[in-house]
Every structure is written in C-alpha cells, then in structure tokens.
Length: 148
Image 1: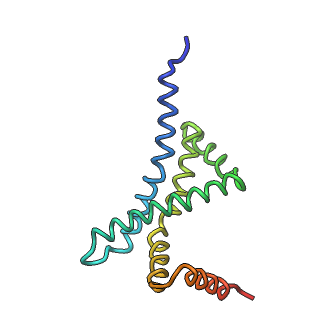
Image 2: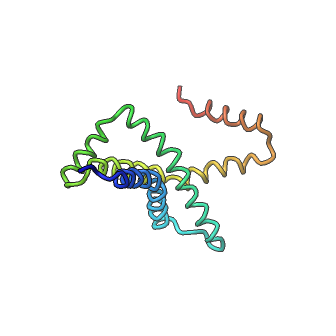
Image 3: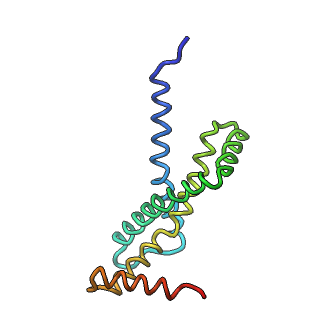
C-alpha cells in the first residue's frame, strides 16, 4: 500500500509551521525572561510592553538567523548532537534540530530590548544631525574603541 500524499504534505506543512513559528515563540520566551528581571516603565506600560516584544522578535530573527547560519557552516556537530539527543529521547531527529534552534533564538532574543534601546539612545543623542554627520560619529566611535 502506498502512503497518502496528504500525510506527506501535512508533515512538510507541520515542519514549515514549526520553523516559522519557532522564532516568534522563542522571542516571547526571551521577552518573558526579561520581564521577570526588569519591570515595565511606570505610566507607559503598554508602549514599553510593545517595544520590548518587538525588540525581542527583531533581535531573535536578525541575530538568531545569522548565528544559526554560522553554526551550520562552522560547527555542524552542534546539530548532530541535537539529533542524537532526540533519538535518545525516542523522538524524531528533527526534534533535536528544533531544540537547538529554539535555544539559539531565545539566547539571541534576550538582549534585544537592550540592543534596541542602545541604538535608539545613540540616535536620540544625535538628533538633528544629517546622515554624513551620523556616519562620521559612528566611524569616530569605532576608531576610539580599537585597542592598540
């Protein structure tokens, strides 16, 4: 007997849903961890809440995807270890990949609000400057931070 096509399509759809939903779920976990230790600003809780969620999501997606690509290129053994761990737990090997990916997304989403706040503060201190002046400030800051 042959396997129905709908089962295969459903499996592929489930994996795609997990891959696309994982960064969002991971950023929400990172956001929750951040709320546990840094309370919302008084008087503007709703806007602060939205800003933190978006910062976690953006940082998780941008930095997390880059870090995953680097890990796949330079340290594929990490994902092999995740696959072995999943098989040891009697789960499909893909579950190990998802666990490793979720850990990376969560770790990248945690500093999101602080990174976005630092970038915002940098632009806020340079309010009124044009793009050339901003580029000069950034270049000067990078030159001053280099160690001899």
